[in-house]
Length: 429
Ligand code: HOZ
View 1 (cartoon, rainbow, N blue to C red):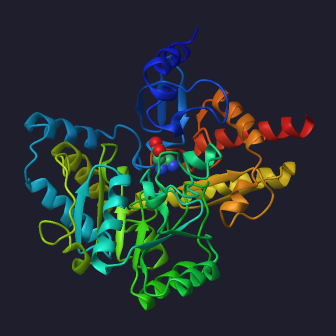
View 2 (cartoon, rainbow, N blue to C red; view 1 turned 90 degrees about the vertical axis):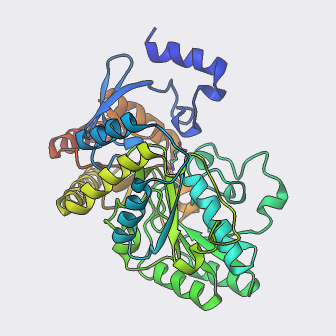
View 3 (cartoon, helix red, strand yellow; view 1 turned 30 degrees about the vertical axis):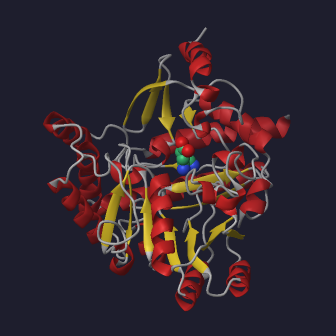
């Protein structure tokens, strides 16, 4: 029996579902999750000695590839000086200044420990600032496992076909309104029906938890405008897109500034960390500067800060990384599209920069309903075929394909050849 299978059996006895986050389970694609031992560059190695080209990258933060020597060195150096102080450090100031210098809309930033925490805190800040309760989110967007936002959420809920989560009291979601991604009318209607009551609108500027769905041309600017007109706080959830689509994230790329932005793992180069930040007048509401309470012993943890400062500085100083990510992303999407047109596979390719998705539906994918039309059984067969071929993708149709600077042209070409073999085989079946 493979060691991964044995570990999975053991794990199921002591960990719910055998995994510490549902998206790691292979429930949607079948089989046992790979138990990972180590990772380096673009490769991830499991406990059975299998090496895969990794297209998950720890769900986003490995923009420079796994175990980047400079990041690892920074972490080791910080760890030798102490693992946690629960007190202010110079590194926190450096990190906040670095983030504010890279993301145009950030004037102040507060560190937390995960993207979920960042979102939860940003919403509280928006509500405290506006004195209003209602929030707008989009179907298929995922903002972590925060009660109020587990409504038609993407990622693991979408993979499991769940409209929401058990254990969330009705009261927690009564002020959550849902709009349709890429459908500005649906947003306008919610603002009209709730005039003067919307505290915030939260959106993934590129939706990357229902597969990848890009914003249509004027969608984000119109959202910006309607939030300004209505005095609602515009929150961009850049847990996936931040520092990835450009040094200043999706907001730099699309030229639309948020009032508040949330970040997660991506700012820690792989360490557990998150942050939220934005306009000074909103951030000044946070305790102890203001009345909105939010706290955490591990917030601004010195080891996480060291990793983050190192990775973000490398990204700031090496614009060629972004050029490479664009090129590799275009190659991957272009290659998949060619295969689709050659083989007649009923698929659609979406994405931008280093984020891509192969949907198993021939229709254009603009929103949650379109994404849900994907043939997930076919995705499951594709996933298993690719895994056997040595390519590790997220075990769900509704996650992104992540590229890093460590991926090579040759790896993309080999991945495309493997994908083509799958479609030729499916065509004959
Ligand atoms: N946003 C990540 C996947 N869509 C979350 C990873 C997780 O839930 O473990």
